[in-house]
Length: 255
Image (tube, rainbow, N blue to C red; front, side):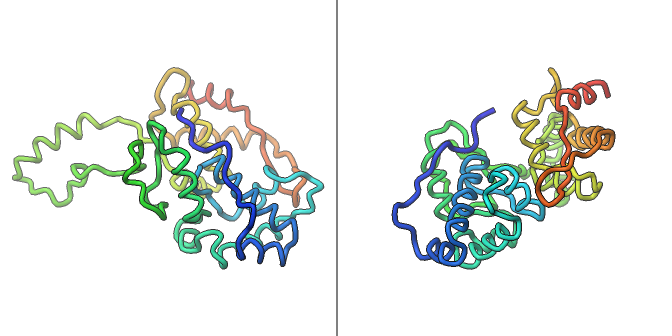
């Protein structure tokens, strides 16, 4: 699978007033949280990160040591302040529950512009990337798939039917939002980004076969999760499960 994030980013020697405001109120911990958030964004997704209810806790667990003095409440407060003063775009957070900004996107796409293929979510963009040759947009729906306004006597419908027959059975990888919504509806506690990252790294293959039904894969993870006792972590009594992903894949192949 093609690399998504980047390994490094530019940090100004002289910070602007927005960062100074964070430092003035929260001290060096505030600065550290903002920089760690930038690291998370650039390294994982490149130009945004999902920020939902559980995100502050997972961010604390994955990006800070146990003696850092940083807490979930502190992270939440700092993110709220960053949304108010423009470090992160408040509109994008309100609409899509993501953290991003013009500056983040400008830096990221400037670094990756020479890649042969850059898969992005068009609705998440704050800048124009149309001139970048390798850009490919996720979840774009070809016009021929919308058959609601097609007249029954329209000759073009015959051609459309042939196209649709060829596309039946093709697997389309789900978005993080789709998996998150499905998991939320089933109340199974599965982390959507973890599911996406695992199978994206495998090219959405289960063994030697292309995945056909991602919801079935989620349900297998769910069944496996119910069969394992939760392990209590060190942050606010948050319960986490350790998954044997290879065993999950074996179970999927046997279904």
